[in-house]
Length: 411
Image (cartoon, rainbow, N blue to C red):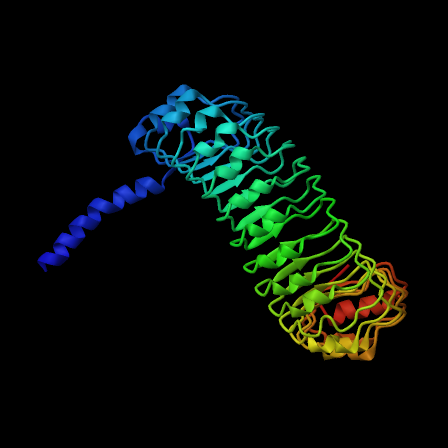
């Protein structure tokens, strides 16, 4: 009984303190009334052009959000917030990283996305505890070598800038697990990236890369690799060493065949190789038994291999914008397929077996040459959306199906 009383007494003392630490203040005036009790301050979307020097009095502050204002600089007193761990400065008008934050050595998270930064402050390496650095959507053309001294970084986002070269020193950031370089002007895949053996997520899409180094196979912990919207025509055979990869994006490149090397990626869950120049699919997909999303639209395909039936776990398939004249009959054996897109081909009729695929949730047949929708499609009672525009389907067929499938949206 005495122990229970002591426990209750301690709990009463602790709970108010915990509650105070979780409270988020949204007014600096309110916060300054009890400065030593303020741990979180959110001044986002306040249309602020400056922050008062008095913010330096909030010495217990751990979390500060200044998102979506009109800030171009910060007061020097910010440097007094020595316990600050999370700082959001995104969607403002900073042209350089404020020097007043470079003494905040407890910072773990720094968001400077959506600003006007054109350089990275040389002394940024002083933020040696930083784990996440978000610099996307700025005007950065060159990565300062100092950033490569931030050896504790786990997450680095430099996407949507104007970077042309990734320096070899990037290989020093050996703790990186997430690296985003998409939407820059990069023409060369720096081989030292493959020294980052802790990487789980790598995105370098929307650049001008033509080849990958064979050492890409070193990144064996990769879960997601986005190489979309480049100028790739092939992949090195060493891609087959990426045994943990689940998401592979190869869309908007110059492939004329599905790379053989991906056949070894048995954990692959999603493959996007849309908008290439592929005319034929061989047996390269047979072993991808865990694949559940396959996007091969906008190629030059007119058929699918018989072995596509081995993809028993496929739930989403997009073969739109190709050269199919009929729905491939192999699809009737894919009993887990819930989303089927066959839009923008030259298909004239929907096969009878399609009406038996009761697991279907979404069908897109837009922009084909289909003229009739048979009554048998009423059996698709799980259908949630049916895209049919751009065909010459009789109005009476549409009206009938709408009545028979009242829960389905027709567009």
